[in-house]
Image (cartoon, rainbow, N blue to C red; front, side, top):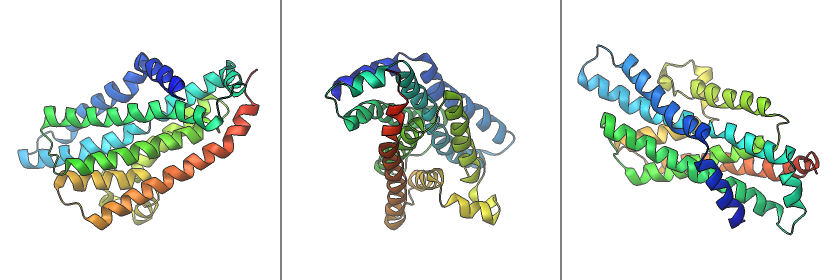
Length: 248
């Protein structure tokens, strides 16, 4: 498993497309939309908008890692790598963990970098940094677990990209990442309760403001873990079917 993980991590670090999706595009969106929504407002209102936008966009762009996960797994499947690894003594769950863990490292690093960008450029507040790190770990697990399940389920890269757009952008809209959740219709606020983006964003906002309630934090972590665990179980169930489609 370690060998698979190290090889995959080296490949991802050298992937310029991945760097664009996880660093450059989020920073560009953050800068542009902060400029749009803070134009003509006073300093107090400007800082409130920035405190809201930075964590919301971090949560939204975390889910774009699923595009790379789909591409990696389908490429291995279609080029025979999956079948060759399946013919070795390497157990299936070691293969999955070896492919999955590098993406977890990358996403967690992405979150840290984007928060640091917000701190350096926009002087955002890190009211409760330890809680920010804990929630970051859980949303990393959840987002990549969903990506793993999707990578082993979809038939083509295009299908995976389309579903990622729905999950990332649709989830952002429904979860209050584009505008305060209170401004959304009641039915959308109800739907948001079932989406990981909503829970992660609310916890990030509370932690940055220094107002985290222990019961609410544990509720958030429980929801994120439950969603991630369900996605991982789907991935385990789907792996034999994924292997059957692998090119020998």
